[in-house]
Amino acid sequence: MAEVIGVRFKDVGRVYYFDPIGYKIEKGKKVIVETVRGVECGTVAQENKEVSDEEIVKPLKPIIRPATEQDEKQLIVNAEKEKKAFAICEQKIAAHKLDMHLVEAEYTFDCAKLLFFYTAPNRVDFRGLVKDLASVFRVRIELRQIGVRDEAKMLGGLGICGRPFCCKEFLSDFQPVSIRMAKEQGLSLNPVKISGTCGRLMCCLKYEQSSYEHLLRITPKIGALVDTVEGKGVVVDNNLLTGILKVRLDRRPDAAPFVVSRKDCKLIKDGRIHVDKAELEALKDIE
Image 1 (cartoon, helix red, strand yellow):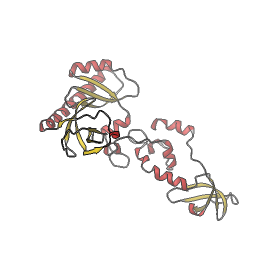
Image 2 (cartoon, one colour):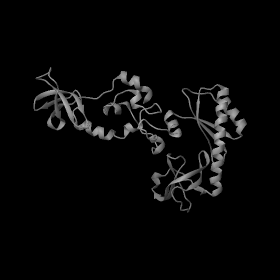
Image 3 (cartoon, helix red, strand yellow):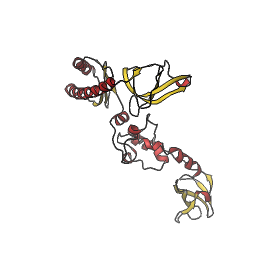
Image 4 (cartoon, helix red, strand yellow):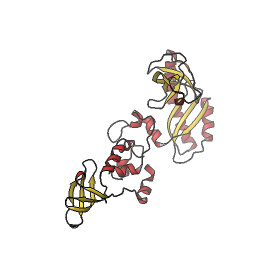
């Protein structure tokens, strides 16, 4: 067991453990720590606690110190420098005619390194750009390509639900989402309806998936063969939430489907939900 504090460097970023070296630091307070990127200022997300050795990524680094008033002022200075660096980098990208979109500029706390995050449709040869930026800022320059989901998380915005992006508000890690989830939830496989502002499948498809998986286990799927009080038939439509089925009866194939509750029929052979190759090919860019 070891005593640790959990430190976060982004508002909704991952939590990393550090050795508090005897300090008792309240949640929300800032600390100065050494990371693989250099000296950084982070916010305490988890107060002092004991964790098992298996939960620790070794070596467990100690904090340097709790942040002082001067450190807080330095963060404000860094933020202003980052705005200027962002504008200069955009100008340099245009001058070098590179096909890349700058998302964010970020200094390490000690200003020893300047990181630029960008998106691009293809691999970018930015060696000339790095040399140009290094001659301007006189610090170590690092350009880091990120995905469109990461861009949305950094910039934030409003989803089609009218609320701030989940990734910006509370998701510390992106959840795996697939076209099959949309299919199993009975959603239209229209990219406009199932993709977020980032152009990828909406993260919220994951939230109710476990409930839909349970309902799919107890509800005959479309194409299933069932036995009802009116006889055997094939399910032509179902509503997972209400449990109401529409069954085309074998003895009355041309009549309107018989409406029945899933509780009032017996499953003989279940149907299957599948995403065909054509659908996957059409939607591959949003997965």
